[in-house]
Image (cartoon, rainbow, N blue to C red; front, side):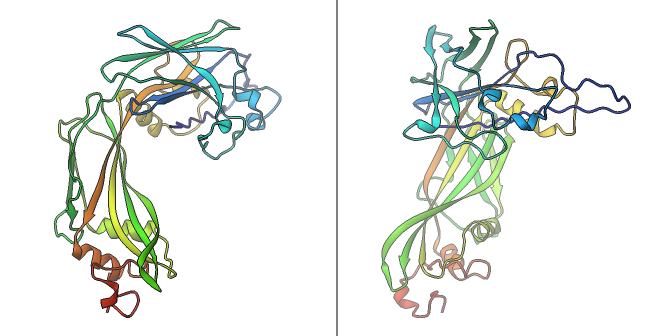
Length: 346
């Protein structure tokens, strides 16, 4: 499941004039956010409406669901263009789902939380068209997207033992996904937990995520990214909290690549360069929505994971006993019985 959070703040400003009309006459403005991923069974589209009132602050409406959600009057479909298969989306209140989707914290109302859903397999070779119709006003909004195809990660590979004490940078490279453009890389650290009084019995597992890079565009056929080895220990130090009541055994890492298509890249990059206050904020937003007063993004992403990436023995020892991380209770490579003085760095 995914949740792409888009927050639109209606703002206006003036320079010299004192009679500027902040809130114009009402016009329907539709906001649409959706990312397709053929790896997922359920696909969600977020559809909301913009609002502004002459008499009250825009922020006063953020806790009123009627201000941001349409009533159940939208006809929403996704069509697979090559086959003309059409999927009808249902309006769902996601807080009531068996596996609810968390909404980003913020000013806007947390419940209800309406999304539009369909459940079908998607073909990565095909293109998909979203169509949203307001059955009361007749407003129609459309958008199209291709999907991001599967790709191969060359390094690291499963069971590869990385040397985070290496004088050279740690090389990561992969084959560019067809239709792929914008990338995130997250490294997830996994470890087991034991009681210091019974160090041979693992009583749990835990993990944290290290965001190595975010929202980076790659164009070459085989992109690569070099990681300074010291960043491994800095990340562990930053993201793992000390806990003297346990022994931690570092297990493995998972490399998680999140790749979006060009439309998503354009949307994110355009949003990142916007700043300041404008009198017509909506008019300055990137959108691939077709339709009057319609804004947002309908795009695609793909997730690739490399599990079971290891660290070598020297790195394990340094994690346990190095100056930066020796307070985090990680055990070194050797049997704890050989280190009678906790945390086994003698």
